[in-house]
Image (cartoon, rainbow, N blue to C red):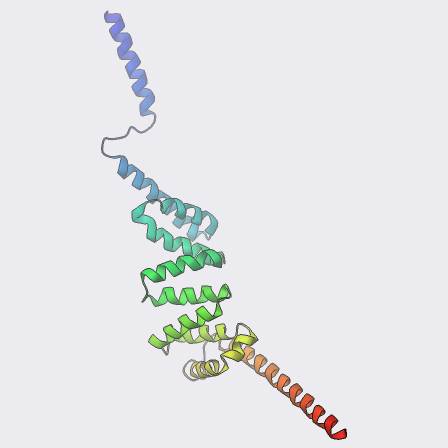
Length: 216
């Protein structure tokens, strides 16, 4: 009987030893352990972000987002990963969602305006920059970026030429040392020259038609 008791006790010790080779759950501590795992996911993602390894960072932010308390912090950083990798299609709905949650956030609005332009949604981008300049009419970054959007293609420039020249004059007057001003001016002159050449060609054709009609 004693031998059987020792055998049972020894067996229990072996089983217990096998169990403690892995951490034993503490009663009532499960939720804290799970939360720590998600926090660790976020820490790993942040490390990858600092290393500019945005793909791996995105993967770990998605894992960390499964924790409700970390969701929005990771959501924002995941959206940044998409911006840094030029994944504009993934970034656009995320920034749009964040702006709906914080509609007065100028930084989010400016970011979304830029993303819209990269996705070819020029009208939406212009609308947001109009809103930004309405609240901050002398903001150098907004003025500069808006001009760049209006110069995205010749058709857009011609459509919003008056608006462009108004903003361009303000940037020239108040921020003559703006780092983008030289490139903006070069593109502006390029489009203006193209427009003048087109008008000259049209005038030449019109004069030619008039001369031809006179000859007849």
